[in-house]
Picture: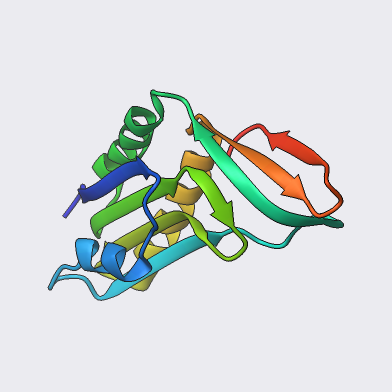
Length: 143
């Protein structure tokens, strides 16, 4: 089997739910489901983060679909992939980026999930505006 079903590619202001993404990729032929959740942490290097805001270019959802679709077309033994990135105001602990991959075996699930995370982070036109506890702020080039 080659090629995977793309179950979701969305850039949204809605809260992201790992359980929902696992359900989206569910497949009776899959022996493994790997889910990556990228959460807002309370620091960036030695600086204390209080909150952040993600802004997306209007093309972001199409870029996400293209990146995930390209990966889905190439992978072997992967059944389905679901990816979402959140935009807007996020608090510490909120899920900002979510990837779920269902595959026949764990190695394909882990490898594909890692590839999706890396490729999306490299290509997605999303910018992070961090707000620090000391009152300063900083824009970061991409998610």
